[in-house]
Amino acid sequence: MGDVPPLLEESTINQHWRTTAGALLSAVLGFGSLTLSVAAPAHADSSMSTPSYESLSSATAGSNWMKRVPDSTNLGAMSIPGTHEALSTFGGDSTQTQEGDSTQAGNLAGQLAAGIRAFDIRVRAVGGQTNSKGEYLAGSYAVHHGVVYQNAMLGDALNQFQTFLANHPGETLLLRLKAECSGSGNSCTDDLTDVDAPPYYDSDGFLVPSSPSDTAKTAYRQNLFSHYLTLHPNLFYAPSVASTATATDQAEVPTLGAVRGKLVLTAFYGPGAATMGGA
Image (tube, rainbow, N blue to C red; front, side):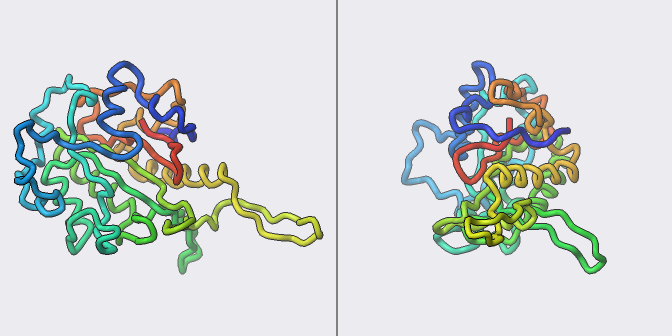
């Protein structure tokens, strides 16, 4: 399984899924923001609705709802329930979007049991460290909403996704991943100490440190994600994380049968609008 695809320009975002069905899936997935949801009945009374963060724990059990959908069903023809900022449970009103479970494992377990199958997760790059044995440990992704750390790492979520899919092989999960940190305003700042940025001499002959280029930052973020692919070689739907994908040669919209038991990366966004990979 290869690394995530190369950085694509904003104008190519909606070309991520080829074929006519791709246009439909683009509308359902919402490449600008995750909008996956189950449509309410036309006759539903809005006064009877309840915010998802108040009703998730009482939702009808849906651990195996995809099992009843035919294998031949194209993902672009499905309305798949998802959560925006799926792990944002800390930070108060300004950042919390999910129920405040005492643990992130409990939060994610509740969503999965309720039938949520699409997850929007935002991450901050954390640099590698050398442990007490002198062994260098690769960098990783911490889950953030803005500047607020959400007491979880991306690896925690992937481990839980893998366990769920092993126990419910008839289901599939969709992941929209975004590098959260722009380094400005109320945003967080990536730890880019591992990014190669050699110092240079200024006009007065003084040696000054250099900031990594945007290209170097993107490459570093992609390499971090590639590390997770190595740790979870059988978790992802392979075409969604293929390194050979380009703006005009993306994975076909798969059928449900093709992705059962797999996690599908729908997009991997950088801090701006451009995407760094995904189906």
